[in-house]
Image (cartoon, rainbow, N blue to C red; front, side, top):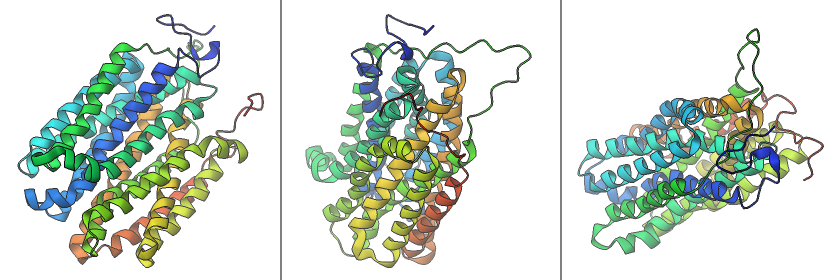
Length: 409
């Protein structure tokens, strides 16, 4: 029988979208926005930060790479913590940590304090994300891909908001605080998210059957390795472009507003890309084919940015759409495939390796920029990353993620 906690029906007791689950899903969306927007905003205001704090390109790359590394390191313990303490408590505390990280980042006067602040921000994100997978399974295991799409859409729109609003909207509102004020404005999201998790109730996953003493411990979900590789590759492309595209186009003669606009197209493309995940996995019989097709398209776009930069808006849209499609599929995998007692750990393992690989994107572009004096080598590297993503997708087991025939739509 499905388990019920705090008068909230468990996932199996009715439709997955109703007045009882709307609160957790809404808060998952808002939290996801907060996990992406403040981090992506770094790239938008990076051209202002570098001269103010005398940052070279390698250190600038670390402003995104270091949080990604902390997200990788802490995702696995964060998932175990969510399994042990419950998703709501972990999410509330992590959102408070993003507020502190944002405030310290705004007050930084040099690279050491700035890097420490973004490290705290990355740690908070790493702890929070596996808990969102646990919420998705608790709300709707049979519809976990759709429930995951809700918070994946929050990540997508968070990236869009961070890149599109930071300079044209939040920078003027910040007044004399300039880029520091932008970081403080984004910290308000963390306050709202932390308060929200304190006010709502979250259904617990259905109780798992008791495991026999003679039965082997449950293993990680099927296809874990290719899911980890594809998650890492799409994250490397997304964060690499989010960090460096404004600086790249600024170096080619664009003014700051236009340079940040083309970077925001990555996140614009992410909106339809993420929404495509549930219908494509149904139509194509599982997760494998959408991942492979998306990797090939992303590779073409990465090489296109290098070889035909005048098509920048097309290429960035394609990268954003394909990245969000695979982000949604990969993040849905633990909620769909893992048993309830280890969904947090599987999500944490996926995110640990995924974000560990993602560090390479912004850091490699920064290092290659310092070594070559240009951005061409870094963009070519992203094209190769897309090819790796497609090849890894071929290793996803056939039929994994296929919707049960008994489920409509």
